[in-house]
Length: 276
Image 1 (spheres, rainbow, N blue to C red):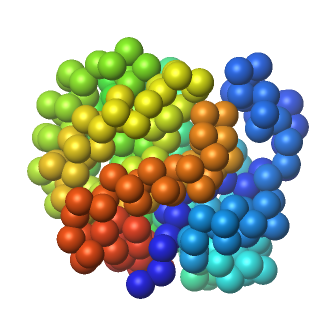
Image 2 (spheres, helix red, strand yellow; image 1 turned 180 degrees about the vertical axis):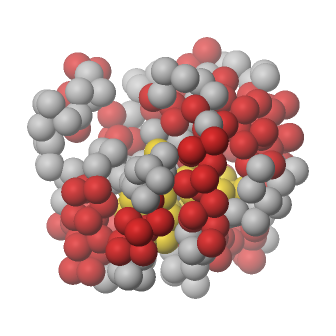
């Protein structure tokens, strides 16, 4: 079973399109392309990766699919489509002709309306994913978990993947109400979870493995290895840790599990969820 990085990004950096990269993250104000990722993967013993959208444009989704066609180690793409558009079905049919389109994501965490995911038009878009066998990636902050539970309950046949363990407030060492809501969300068997994006929710320079332990353990207890998958969130992770450093940290944390459970977290779950 290959080791899969279920969450990374490619981009050609411009200040206009990546304004969210502030001065504290200035080390990632540059291009990140397949040759860069291939080098990181080799060093970390990772075999395949899933590319995730960073901009909300069809242009980027098409570009990611092109990169996936040109680079076999990119096993799948989580793109963006205009889910609230009444004609989103035709857009999906065009893009899904490329079999590496495995999922769609919208930057829900950036919407001013904190209940955006419950909009009728957005939910029609999700239904279009379900009928085409595409996954939906959930990008939220921990404060969005209550409405996320309501949202996923509307779509019991849709596969969801939660990004970055819902971004708990690790920097402040706060567990609740994140832990309570994560446990509730995980009761839905059609929801998976990526072990990713955690160091960037902590202090970039002062986080510790022991600080992360309780968050790791909570998602393990809640989702189990069969619904947990490794993700690096490269290159964003590099503001706080290296690519190999994160992969090794997840490997080390999972050492206490059985060999089969480790394989699930390091690759099998991603292959199953995204049908890679």
